[in-house]
Amino acid sequence: MKTSSVMQKFIINGGKKLKGNIEVKGAKNDALVIFAASLLTSQPIMVSNVPEIEDTKRLLELLEKLGCKVKRIKYGEYKIKADSLASYSIDPEIAKRIRASILLTAPLLVRFGKVKFPHPGGCVIGERPIDQFLEGYKSMGAKTHNRGRLHEIVAPRLKGAEFIFNNITVTGTESLIMAAVLAKGRTVLKNCACEPEVKSLADFLNSCGAKITGAGTPHIVIEGVDKLKGGTHKTIPDRVEAGSFIILAATLNSNVVIKNCEPEHLDALLSVLRLAGVNFTKKRDRVEVKSSKLTSVNIKTHEYPGFPTDLQAPFCVLLTQSKGQGLVHETIYEGRLLWTEELKRMGANIHTYDPHRIEIKGPAKLRGREVESPDIRAGMAYLIAALCAKGRSTINNVYQIDRGYEKIEERMKKIGADIRRI
Ligand code: EPU
Image: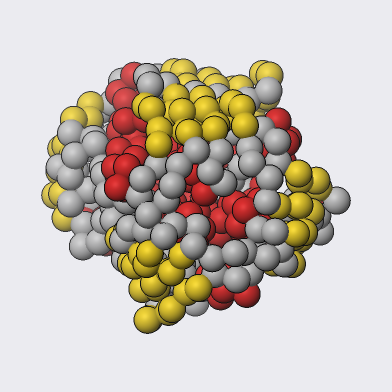
C-alpha cells in the first residue's frame, strides 16, 4: 500500500486573501458506497466523477484483493466487474485503516452467504461501534460470531425483515439496503439516515433493477429481487468539500466562486452562514462567496438535513474570525473536538466545557504553527487556519488530507493560496 504522503508536509504562508474559482470533486462517501454496491452484481459497473483520493484508492485495492476486476478507464472513471470474486474475507491491513471497509460486509454476505472481517479500527474521532450492522444482519436471519476483533457472519440467504435503527448511521443504513436488495421478501427500515449519499445509492441500485422506495427519508422499504444487472453512476458532488471551500472563503474574507456543487445539499450550512453575516449567492450548481463581516453563531451537529459533523471542524475556524462567542456542540462523535487543542495553540480563544462542547470567542489573531492532522476533516480545518494565520505553518502527515481531498494544494494555489507540498 502506498502511503507516501504520511511523510509529506504542507508549508503554508498565511494571511493572504483568496480570489477566483474552485471546483468541487465527486463525493468520497458516495464513490465508496457505490464501489461496495458494485459487488452485488457480476455485470460491469461504470463509475465516473470519482475523486482520486487515498480512500477511494484503498477501497479499490480491497475490491481487487477480493478478486474483483477494476479498470481505470480514464482519470476519475472506473469500470468494476465482480464476476470472479474469490474471497469473502476482507483484507485486515487495509480494513484497519479505512472504516468504510465495513461497507463491503453486506455485498459479500449476499454473494457468498458469509463474510469475515476485522473490526474496522484506527478511528480517532470516536468509538464508532458496529452493533447496528450486526443487529440488522441478524434480524434478516444471519448468525454473527466474533473472536476478539475478528467478525464472521453467516447467512445462506438473507430474509426480508423489519429493522429499526437505535442510532442513525449512514453506512449502517447503506449496508442494510445492500443486504436487502437481493434478500427474500420485503425489508422495512426505520429511523434511517437521510443523507444524499443514501438516496444516491438507492437511485443507483434501482437503475440496476432493485426495488427501493423512501431513500432520503427515515423510512425505507426494499422489495427483494432475484438479480441485479450492471449500470453506470456519476458520483454526486462532495458536499463536505464544497462546504469547506465556502467556509474557507468566508473565513479569509475573500471573493471565491465554489463551482460544480449541489447547493441544495448544503442548506443547513448556508442558513447558519447567513446568520453569521456571510455574503453569498446561491446559484444552480455554484455558490459565490463575497467578502463578509462575520458574527458568531452557535452550531449543533446533527444527522442530515442538520448541520454536518464533517463540517464542524472547518466551521470552528470560521468562528475564531467572527465577532462574539459561539458554542459548538458536537453531538455525533465524542472525539471530534480534540483537534481544537492545537487550534488554541495557534491563538484561538476556546473554552472546552466537555468532549462534546466548546465555546469560541472571536475575532482572534491566529499565528502559524507546526501541526499534525488526526483525521480528514480536522486536516482541512488546520489548512484553513494556516491560510488565515499570520506567518508560516507546517502541516505534517498530509496523508490524512489526501484521504479526502484530491490534489488540494494545486486547487488552492489557483485561488491564490501560498501552499506547497514537500
Ligand atoms: N453508531 C452506532 N452503532 C453503529 C453505527 C454507528 O452507535 O453500529 C453511531 C456512532 O457511534 C456515531 C453515529 O452512529 O455516533 C454515526 O455513525 P457512524 O460512525 O456509523 O457513521 P458512518 O456511517 O460510519 C458516515 C461517514 C462519515 C460521517 C458520518 C456522519 C462514510 C463512509 N462515512 O460515517 O464520514 O462523519 O457518516 O455523517 O459515509 C468523513 O468523511 O470524514 C467521515 C467520517
